[in-house]
Image (cartoon, rainbow, N blue to C red; front, side, top):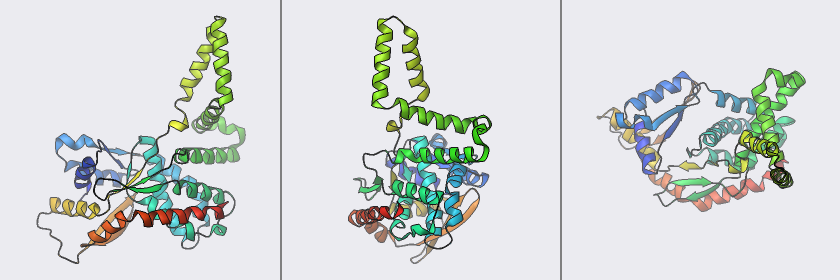
Length: 328
């Protein structure tokens, strides 16, 4: 086994990355990341940072998906929900840390949208499925000028910035249902996030903004500074509006992915030269749960064709968007 962080870091730096974030929701991921970081030159070890060390973000994503998990009893719904965790977790991390996402999770879940049976879900699960589907279909594929690296970009809308809004509302609803108004006292952090969101939406309305502008102008004319100061403190408390939120793109490395693993293997084991036809096994883990995938050596051309097939990916996006009406 060989950690891939070293080889991946070189490739990502060549694409303009100035820092690489690796999720470490459990000690298992932290240890694997530490192995890779130790192989970097000492001058570059600060390039890689482990985030979500205690799995708090992952747990919030899993809690949000729980109604879907409980009702997804057959394929493809069960597979979609499993892949949706990857997608939502990566989007949540990318949004929080203002980072692009190396991977193709959005392409994977996009392919499920047209074949999902929306009647398999009911109640709250159906609403959350609709939210996830709208988020998935907000991404549009594009090919960059840097080799065959493909970006999943997003249109000029606010859907992606709603990732935490979806989760916050779900948590707040569960909080109120479980403990009534006392939930405000028992779980002040959740309540504060929800209240901040509601207040931001209120004060962000054009009519309210005009009213505050008029109020502060009147206060200045009357030399009543307190109103103006309070208005300013409210804006500072709420922070930047959701319209300024970062929209994380997915960056699919395409055929470069096999190269990364080959370099990683050669760096760790100089004599390991995979012959033609070799199957490379990749280990993935999430909070200590390990899974595997595989790829045959020699499939670079296939990956290159797929990376360049923007028309095909766009057609799949349009197919997915046309299926959105089934979730309403």
